[in-house]
Image (cartoon, rainbow, N blue to C red; front, side, top):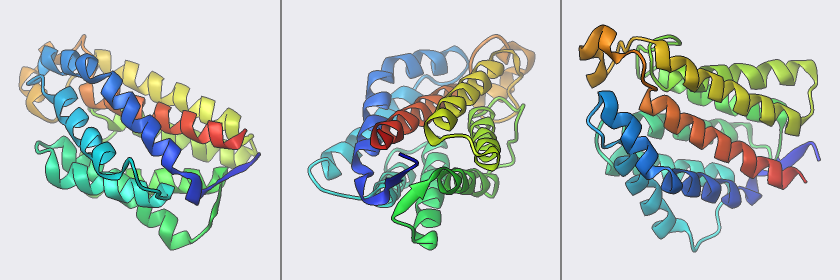
Length: 215
């Protein structure tokens, strides 16, 4: 199949929840190396609240993104809540504005890019600054490239996952320019950025959830 239905999106969101829950300790460990160590705990809290509040209900992909975004924005605290909340809510808004029930690769590429552009309106960080942008921007670019090239949806999702992982891994040797870890300067090198790590987990789960619906 070359598309999935917006109305079938609940399974995608629940994969995202599981991805964060299963990696709570890992994200805490990564964050603890150059940050305050609470990234895994905070992300797990937000995604678990979403699961408890909406897991028994039916919702579309856009509704799930919006509801999860609102929880992250308002209920987990710290800087990452508004950041992830903005990304997910901008994606949701883009889906609703386009109004298509069937989501094709070109649509998904547009929606993820809307999340990235929304983030750019909130933060000054760009690729190379050792933030989640280093995972999100390459993933969005990969989707847009594959959409323009006519690549199959499933293959494009695999490419997106690889781009996000490569972006995450690139943060290891970068110097942090934003957040608490930026105070360490050169000492922030040699460690993955926790935000890039969690972004990669979310994007991978999102891609895998979509891929299941394409079968």
